Length: 364
Ligand SMILES: [Zn+2]
Ligand SMILES: [Zn+2]
Image 1: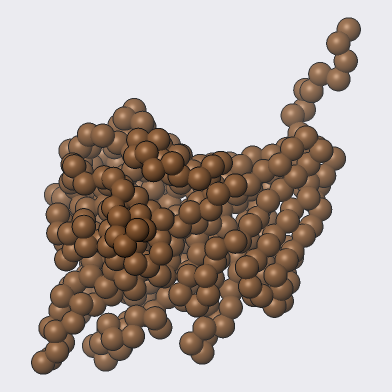
Image 2: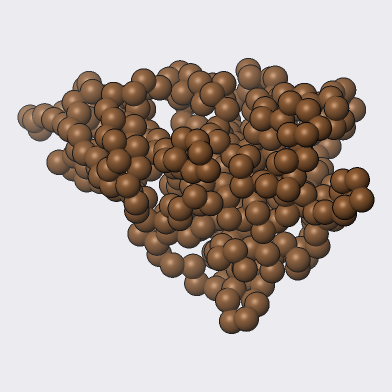
């Protein structure tokens, strides 16, 4: 398996971000990312996808979109859209129809910042997702860098503190979002989780000081997606785009908060007597499934089944367990950073399904 790092949910000058696509690609490249997806509000920007090279290092820049109904007040229900080649924003008033149209167009969709509280004193509304009756989307944005700010800021002094010291901001995905994710999967759905930056890199005046708050370079070294691909990227835009977006939609990935320590190298896998599964895959119980967890550094590790912690390992680089119980299994790792215990890795699940009941066991 080949692991690549991908940052997504990034706004450019085409909506309310401050950077051009070239500047975003440069920041992504300098941060050591392999790929970045720019997702402006309600506009599918053409002609910007491709490989960008800086100092002999290349980064793949893809274009997605963040769609919402602009006539809805407040404008809730934001959807991240990847892999479509045409503008679908006009379908926004009916979220289910929008999701269907994205599927017809060969794309994938993720519910953006599912829980996103208001922060009135900086003019931020509540942009949560509210239409939970929808079906057919690929997943949800489990950890959003900007939504989290709205939960840790309680006034101007703390807003200014985080603007100057963004490294203190990220703690973990919002507990309500984690609960929602587990509940959706417990209902039988496959729901892939992604981490999003919601990067805008806004130029702000803070008293006498001008400052770019939460610059792209901060986001690109923070909440990233690590995708597991069957083979290395080839440098061919059309081919690589397909491979990356397929892995993202399937959940063959984990979310890594790379600021405290690089998360590259984390693995969560399963095997039974018939074969192996990686994050995002389904596997049947058979006569037992062996789950294996590997971390690049020591951390506190939790294995969850259907949203409940079933095993814990303290300050460990490995975990393993054999199970004969079907369920949705996923892994969380946390570690201390800047005086607090913070979420470090959130795996996509491995779906262990019951054995088929009507298996043919003889051929007469
Ligand atoms: Zn949004
Ligand atoms: Zn956004």
